[in-house]
Image: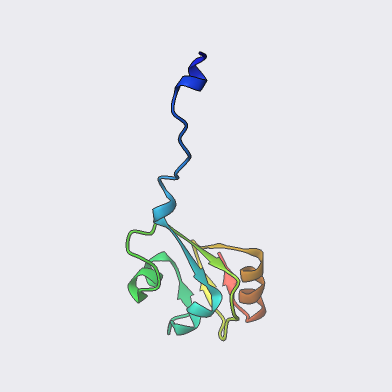
Length: 89
């Protein structure tokens, strides 16, 4: 029997999935600061301390202008932040 049929089949499990965090745009409204980065989100308790990256997804709307740096965004989240007068670095 060929080797690929003899070996057990296993699925793929990402080793970095535990270090990625997701956050909604409406969750940023709880912050009192305008300049937001990864460290600010960790100190506020919105993401876990072991998170290495965060992605902002569209969910709700921003009530104030935020300046984001070092945060990944979806297209809907980018639109929501920029429509509130915010900027992305």
